[in-house]
Amino acid sequence: MNKKFASRREFLGAGLGAAVLSGAAVSAALASSPQRATAPVGEGPFYPINGQTERDYDMTRVEGAAGRAKGDIILVQGRVLDDTGKPVSGALVDVWQANAAGRYDHEKDPSTAPIDPNFQSWAQVRADSEGAYSFLTIKPGAYPAEEKWVRPPHIHFKVSKRGYHEITTQMFFEGEPLNDIDNLYLAVAIADRAGITAKATRGTAKDGEAALLFGFDVVLKKA
Ligand SMILES: [Fe+2]
Image 1 (cartoon, helix red, strand yellow):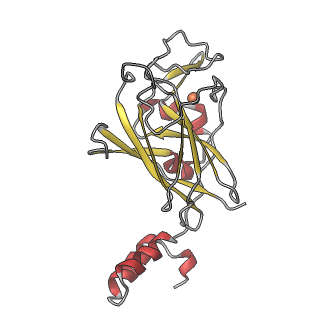
Image 2 (tube, protein in one colour; image 1 turned 180 degrees about the horizontal axis):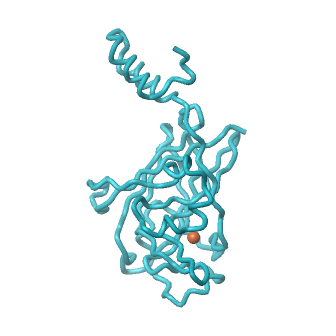
Image 3 (spheres, protein in one colour; image 1 turned 90 degrees about the vertical axis):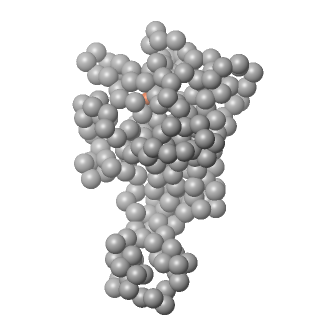
């Protein structure tokens, strides 16, 4: 078997068939299966510029503000991997998004929807030694981009690490009807859409607060 191009299923089969393989060896084999690089999606006009200093893991609270961000609290978690499936430890995961009303905290946003003073709107977190990252946020609202074009809920991602090509993309939510008529989503090759579409898992977040977890792995190409 050509290890480099073996599928995850083949590795599982090999692992189950060969009793001599330890759990650790199977994990190592799974961890090095080839990955399809995450497709880029445009940065858009609302990258944060407001000089916020608060960019921590919890976007649902703002230091000094009394309340909690409006909207459905979600936990987004995933791994940053390279295209051989190895974790990219220490990668910077830079995310920004609209609030629950579909408004960005950005002077160029023409929306008349209110800014939510309890919503952080921007976070920068680092992938750990296993490439894992997470952040707590709220599900963003849809917003009109142009006449006859409403952007579906999405979270902007910029992921970088020295030695890899930086990727700018957007995380979409599985099952949103607006995905299927979104110009940016439709511009991504069909085979790449699953890689930018997060699936929900109902469960208990690690801090016990998010009703929905969304898994979103990012695959970087080596520079
Ligand atoms: Fe956007």
